[in-house]
Amino acid sequence: MNKKTLTLISVALVLGAVYLVKFTDWFAEKNIQILFRMYKGQPFFGLENKEYHLTSIKVVKVEEASTNKYAPALWHVVAADPEKGSAGLTDFIYGQKIDGMGPAIPEMTPTPLVKNTNYRILLEAGKVKGEREFALK
Image (cartoon, rainbow, N blue to C red; front, side, top):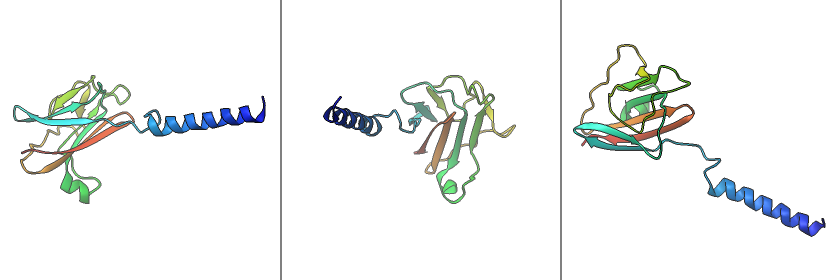
């Protein structure tokens, strides 16, 4: 091969690599997209695009989380087996018992949520994480 051919192949490979990094999600950090709505008076969360085996669900007040890195959780459940996670989930209701998960602190029960307060839900499914702020109206 001559220099011109090698140069063209090199440029094509560089452009292809740039395209893969900038315009695809192959190398992007994976996030859980969380949908929120009220369902029969209860906060309802949907997990967009796929079923997840969650390893942690935590709800905190936004105000407390902004001033305290370790804000107390209003609801915090973790997977009994962190390798497997919970049963496959696409949606759940605040405070719901989830197969394969239990309270992070034994005997902890979900704290009732109040209207006109901002909350943040934090989800983990192994290395994949997601969070969303919500409020009851």
